[in-house]
Amino acid sequence: MVDMRRQYKYLICFLVGALIGAGAFWLFSRYRGITHADKFDQVLQLVDKYYVDSVDIEQLRTDILPYMLGSLDPHSTYIPPLESEMEEQRLEGQFEGIGIIYNIITDTIVVDQVFAGGPSETAGLEPGDRILTCDGKSLLGERNNQDTITSALRGPKGSVAHLSILRRHTRRNVSVVRGPVPIRSIDVSYMLTPTIGLMQITTWARTTYDEFIQHWGELQRSGAKALILDLRDNTGGYMDAAVAVANEFLSKDQLIVYTEGRTMPREDVVANGEGMLQKLPLVVLVNENSASSSEIFSGAMQDHDRAMIVGRQTYGKGLVQQPFTFPDHSSVRLTVARYYTPSGRNIQRPYEQGSLSSIEESLMSVSGIKPVGDYADTLSLTKQKQREYHSDKGRLLFSGYGIMPDIFVPQDTAMINAYAARLIMSGAMQEFAFYFVDLNRENLREISSVRELLALLAQEKSLINDLAAYAADQGIAQRPLMLRQATQRLQLQMHALIANHLFGATGFYQVITQGDPMISSAEQYLQENYHTR
Image 1 (tube, rainbow, N blue to C red):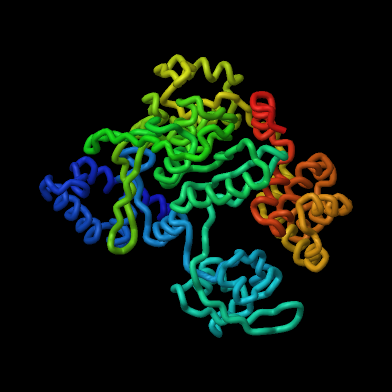
Image 2 (cartoon, rainbow, N blue to C red):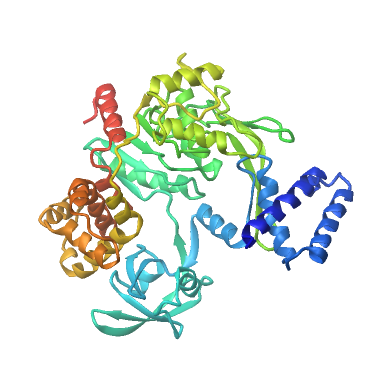
């Protein structure tokens, strides 16, 4: 029997070929005729009338868009309405809801965390509360999934969610007035040493600059004289946010970035000289998933010799997308320009038109997933293909393959065994961590710091064996030898997950990065060059 999904995909590919071959990029130009559009409509009419199976023509039109845009470059894309709305909320830094993080345990919603200052905290919700109904509608049972629950709990600002909850075996009613719930782009901020602050930016949102200033103020009051800024796995966001933070570190009239495209004349963005951190010792952490706005920030710091870049070669996304939103709230993100670092570097990785293959191959070679040799060999190969640039102080720089760090830290390629990987990837470890916290919630309320938590967990000698037993109940057969081999790594992961439930992202980060070689390298650099301790 023919695979209908494959057949449908072939149909889309055929139509995309017809669309592109007909020159139907008229969608983005008012000056071309509609002849090719008519031809494409005629093809759709033929499909509707004669195709062997029934086809939803309107859905087919929508399904064609990603293929069409994907033929241009790896980053031009079509985003459906729901995804577009969620992405907009993420970048805007807030959504309307009740402000909780929850887990679903045996078909019941259990509150895990309550956002500080959010609607649920105001209404008195607590971690451990079971939510039974919302506005009279039961939220129990297998028929409820994350989408239906999110739909029930979210709503317009000012509307009221009437909840029935179970708290310590007592049922009670709570009314929560829905309101803005922040989506923070900086959740991790703490003092690594008495004089070195560490901050992690996970995305560049509209709120990032204000968050950065707030967190730096707290670090400064705690004694910070230097900063480690972690941009690992930060795939980008608003360029303006990265520019605003970069402005804090640069002198007046120093170029931060410039953009230029076929229909967009060159536009320079320069520092205004009002930044408060122009002399602050800075280290930026990057890896192969640091992209776009993260590369703009890192490139500006590197070109002006303003910060030491530590880690691994970044993703290499040097194209600027402009969003175009349609009445149904779907959107197209179309590449309209390239951006360049102050020295003139465009760090976009080479790609075949519309293909990510060359990018993915390059990422594999530098990330350790598929090693092609040591770092010196990879760098030598890269140098042969790249144009040379120089920083303000004359250091040699290269373009076209992301940002090359000043201090390279290779990826840990030590593999965890198959049993440990299954414990993590199946979700069994995450579920067990939550169960542990939920069952011990009263005792854990007395814990006030990550250090206290780790001291307590060190006494839980059977924690990993209990995890294995729990996973066995979920159908994952125990492997005693493989469990012993992976105990140390599983223990670190489990402790971090438990810390996340109690202390949020900062707790998770502080535990999971114990012995992190990038952070150690950054700390050593600051201590040796700025005498920070």
